[in-house]
Amino acid sequence: MAAPTAAVHKGSFIGRPNADPPPGVQNTSRWAFLISLSLVGPCSTQRRPGSGIWHTTDVNMGELDVVSGPRLERRQEVPTLGIRETVPFRTMLSNRDRLLAELIAWLTDHGVEPTGHFFLRLHVVNMSGLMDIEVGASGATDISDGRVQAGSLPAGDYAVLAYRAKSMAANRRLHAWVREQGLVLETRPHPRGEAFASRCEIYLTDPRKERRKTRWVVELAFMTRS
Image (cartoon, rainbow, N blue to C red; front, side, top):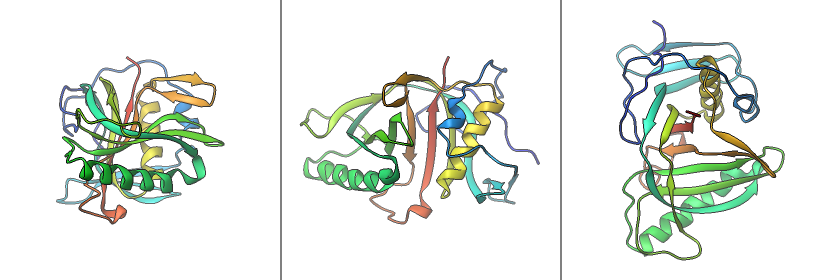
């Protein structure tokens, strides 16, 4: 059975997996390739019997658990609280973990409960240098300081893929799908790399309740150009 095609629909920030396919769109972006670690290789996709989960086998990465997507989804603006830093690409994930722990401690100390999920947002990408990242959570509060800042994830059309484990393979799969659909990611040149209107890794699994990252369901959400 073939993998599901794209779907465009209105919905919450966590989208629904099933909808009608959209009409074709034009153009693509070379950054869909440059911001992934390498070009996607040959792969096959199939559904695990009785599970509703799609698996993509990449010859370089092995089996990828695709929970939902890829699809195109229209999303509304979401208020956020986050900590933003510029960090080296090679240590980005360890810095993400540090900032996530700091944000969780801040929320606990201030009695703030997120209204949605925690996330990693890539504001400016430069894999040979520094990455401008934000670790945040959906939510709003009147409490503010110089460290945790209020912000938002902008409204727009997002290419979305939810998966378990194998982050590199998931990013390759979504970038390949963006190319196949003729979509363009919403980016602009930046003195330190490439700036993204909204490129997020959203943790559908609460990291406060499940510490094993291999068990997290993670949603990639990349804003596309209208």
